[in-house]
Length: 356
Image (cartoon, rainbow, N blue to C red):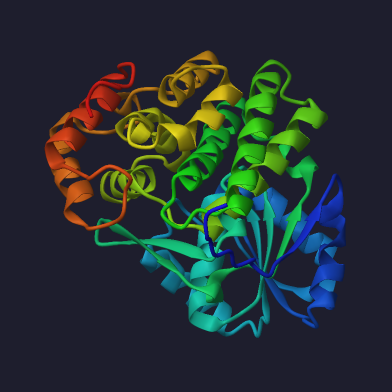
């Protein structure tokens, strides 16, 4: 056994169908009394339902979260919250909503309760990504780790099949990069393989039967395991590339992860074959990159950057940005090779395992 360090994150997790009905009890357990409920505009009905469950504990509903957590949206939300006397943030939704809650928590130190409706995994991490002036930056601080996460499987039943798939593959990305993380450890590897296994098992069932509660439960459990990986170790090329593409070109978050994951793994796979082989075995393929590409295809997920809004004339700039910032990766990040990777992803080619 190699030497390692592992730091457990302090967070209460409540998992199961109908658990959202205990949100008021969780507020009381934290010794709090006045909450703001945050969502996207599209999920306002869910926010209103949580507000009704809270009753007099809800001071404000704020359905204003948007993708990539723009700083100007956070600042506008802070203005509305400042006069409401709230002492707790409740976020109901996916990564966009959780991101806004975290951004507010960073600036106010307010505790957070999160009710996820997707498989983004951000709720399990002390990581905040924010966009300002066309660039997305991330930071890691315990100030943004939610105190409580309520995983109510019922909240995920209405998640559209297409978003279910891309959100699930986004979660798998967290686990896959955790397998070769510079600061990986045996506990995170266990979480990663457990999360990948649950999602690979669940996603095909959900695409055939979106209301299958057992599969939805498996997917949400897998998302929690994968999110725990994201919160415990540092990510590498895949996440850096997706942050660049999403923040600088306003690409949809989970779709970008879905398209890029096979290509980023192909870039790294021959550098760390032993670390990625257990995940490839879960997909039943010799190559993890090819297995992930085939999984996305079989589930009807997008496989081309060109289909999700990436401009072809932006590929050179994207490659420069991905290669410009120094970060650890199992294979050196070289601009020309990154440009070829982006070209494969733009046209939806099978990942290029020979480009090593």
